[in-house]
View 1 (cartoon, rainbow, N blue to C red):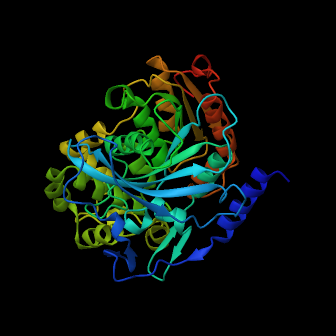
View 2 (spheres, helix red, strand yellow):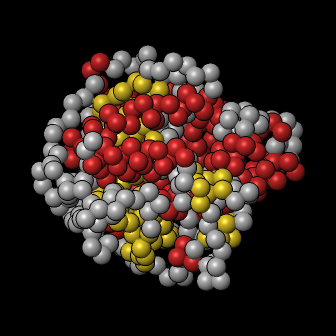
View 3 (cartoon, rainbow, N blue to C red):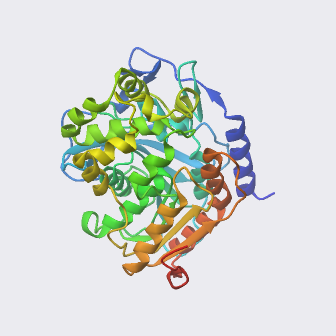
Length: 438
């Protein structure tokens, strides 16, 4: 069996058994989130560099899934990062993440390429950060459940000889603020600035000449889609060869309605918390509609990971959170400021100038297929180079499974498409075969 295949098999088996580990508290560490002590590395300094993407600090990051070899550990070596970015209000912000240098050579043309991985939904507690998930694929301590499910896509890219940088997003990991869940600009900035930061990691083989790709599913699909849109204006120094956007939440009004009462109903709390973190002027509006149960739920969810939320808030309805029994969608429809905020999060009003592969499960009713497909239609109408992939799988009977199954079923093809772009192979487009309506 080839080494790369053995590596992927080992990683898959290890991820399946979840490699149970627990973060231990030490006297030198800083913040405790839901019983988990966050390493002091994640505490931002009071002053940040001026340039977006500038490194604030780095530290070695031990990978839980690693195999010894003569050239060095497989799939590679990892570095914990903190870098400077800009939030949606134009304020400087520290973002954490990880850079991974592959042990495998890049066999394609040109310099070793770089892919920025934007994680899917991890939660809102700092202990949920994807960079911590690389070190602890399963965090289980009786009070929190966090699964580093993005590790598989990271390892598959490393096995191709592609360097990877993973962002933790604004406020996830870094302990100075709450994570601004599904904020379009915060996510896009964090992704693009992670690329800039990776170029300056000591010992990194990637440079400004390296081709760059973006890879994300669900929350990550929204972040990479938004990053591809704003790249020419925000990060003209980051030349994208291709972007994979899987199941992007392009229309948060539609997604909000879909997740209410679903397995992932807790994500409503993360979204509302993130809206208020992004725009404090929304807080009195939200407070006016929440009852005691709603305030308690949002506080509780603010430190939860996705595993916690599935167990504690699965199938809950937001009508129990408001003072008058309205749903969160009803509140949004009633309040012009909330409608305007969500409208400002809409992805699809600007065409990316680089190729994009957009995939969505046709049975996905958690991050609804129709709104993701509409993003492809909108981009095509604006002249973008879009490869639209409807992932057809049997209806699993549960919203969460219908959302997650396409992630695994399509991942190999998505990585193959992206590595082809990183090799300089031109992308096709399916826009001519994509009518405006299904």
